[in-house]
Image (cartoon, rainbow, N blue to C red; front, side, top):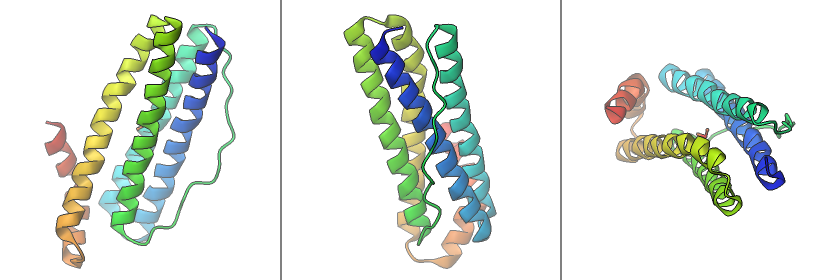
Length: 166
Ligand code: FEO
């Protein structure tokens, strides 16, 4: 494995781990605020990001790369509204998408078609996650400041996502 690819994949392990911890902090915030549906959504997003991290660790080991398990900064754990919570979700996904694109650029430069092929799964995943974040933010923008709207959003978040993914 080329050193530049190895470094970028190690960075990506950190970004996926950061996303996992960020969504865990967001789930816990929502749980404490009484939004059980939103909490479940972010608990499961947190699990998914951990899976994304593990997939990279295993791929690197299969390819004989040297894996570094990183230390992480503390995630943001205080939000002034549901809107800012979901803005954080979208900005986190956009950040990860940018990093994945950087890896793909480097794979093409180094002619590492195997890693490029592996990374295509992440490209598809990012498209879906960004679309989910935008759909949920659109719903929140329609709700505006309406408290009963928040109640319904929390109750229906799982079905919004299933509808979106259908
Ligand atoms: Fe695995 Fe959504 O970044």
